[in-house]
Length: 153
Image (cartoon, rainbow, N blue to C red; front, top):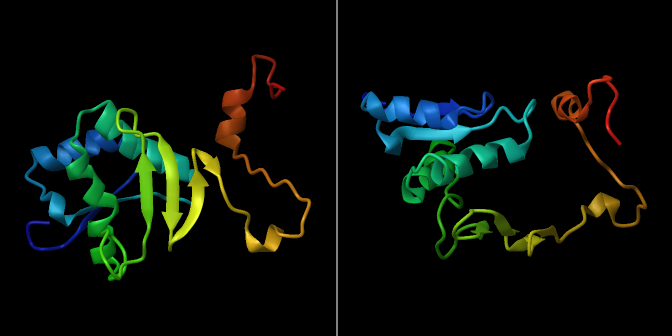
């Protein structure tokens, strides 16, 4: 980062606050830092919860954390229409509860995806479908298992 390169911290190990503190304690420039998720093995909620935890539990200022997942990332990926709220931009917005940072609304490309904390859209391919799709990884399943090794109902 001191030579102008960007650095990325992955949230896969669920210890983002630890590594943000390490980065800052060692002179890292927050303008040269991005935070991402190895989404092939972790849920998007893990990423969100790690960001939220940095602010709520570890007292990082939101104004320092937010650019790590918005403006800085858009700059690295050269996504000119992303990363900021401004005229002519993509209109991607998250509305959070002030005290808890719980998600209330999600607007992406001007389309409302979450309203009042509930999913407010249906994928086009599901429009005429009666399918109910649920994905669960082994980690989530292991947490739900009791002593008998069977999944709790």
